[in-house]
Amino acid sequence: MTDLFSPAKLGTIELANRVLMAPMTRSRAADDGTPTPMMLDYYRQRASAGLIIAEGTYPSENGKGYCRTPGIVNQKQIDAWGDITEAVHREGGKIVLQIMHCGRCSHADNKSPTAETVAPSAIAADGEVYTEQGMKPFSMPRALRGEEIAQVIEEYRQATENSFAANFDGVELHGTSGYLPAQFLSPGSNQREDGYGGSLENRIRFVDEVLRAMSGVQGSDKVGLRICPGFPFNDVKDPNPQETFEALLERIQPMGLAYLHLMRASPLDVYALGHEFFKGPLVLNGGYDLRSANKAIQERGATAVSFATSYIANPDLVNRLAKELPLNDVREELLYTNTVEGYSDYPVYDG
Ligand SMILES: Cc1cc2nc3c(=O)[nH]c(=O)nc-3n(C[C@H](O)[C@H](O)[C@H](O)COP(=O)(O)O)c2cc1C
Image 1 (spheres, rainbow, N blue to C red):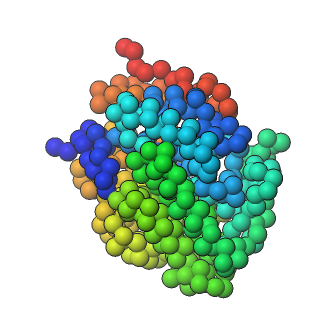
Image 2: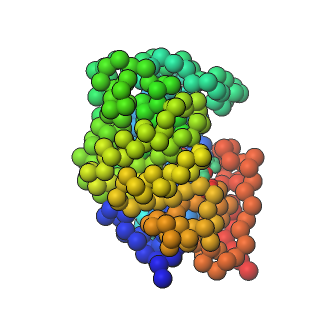
Image 3: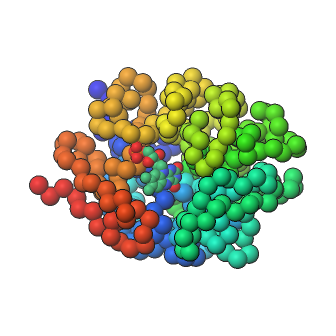
């Protein structure tokens, strides 16, 4: 019977098993966004995952939101990512990169002095963000001018091209957690009066066009989309997320994306939504363990399940799940520090 340990395919990406590593920001890149040697160790250690979805990575300097997050903008960053993909591939693993433009969820202190904070509308997100000087309110964004939207879409396309230059097996568009795609989708952050705001049809246009641009690089079967309908994180305000995401999925369904990555963090049955409106492979995420993940595959038609928290402390998660071995505990206070401690020093099972 098919289970977590059976091979699978997401678009053209062939997986040895269905235990995926979910994308996780860990703030271990250099200040200039270049991936570091400890990131190489961390991802290599986790290469037995069926697929690693590497952490949210900015496609342009404007898209950076947080300290020590990586970019895929310049040659230095591409080369450092290339070393990471090579290390993962050498271990027999597969790895895609999550492209994350933070839009208004950012602070000027966290990005290059010439970069700007841009968003669909000049409405600041209600909340605070970590900076090296402590927590600060999110910066007020500048509303993108109509003609600038094509430039932002081009940044996603170029980031996709750069990802393939770094030998990633694919890319994932980060559409959750209140970042730029979610800002366009949600009426609370998108009050534009042009073709990218107002009606439902206009609000979904940006994500549709970004996915088309990303798919144009090496095909839609190497592009995934991550969504989390109804998740209010980072001040997402949408009175009818069910309607928004139904319309989005209906619009993108004909593209033939590699997969839809559904994070469940709201009362909505995001699985039912994905199943009804997206006919390609589904990756489920959010609080799964061995039993519930196998059930999702065997009874609910999921192709794979992604694990975030369990992967932080268990580089050998596949082996531990397969043999029902105990899991290491996460040291939460070390999640976003900038050393190997609590990052690439978690042990494999040695019993
Ligand atoms: C430290 C940390 C960083 C995260 N960073 C990202 C990220 O960069 N992109 C993203 O889509 N989700 C991110 N998430 C959300 C996780 O991918 C995942 O959806 C969530 O933790 C629930 O999965 P779990 O129950 O297996 O932990 C992050 C979660 C954690 C704990």
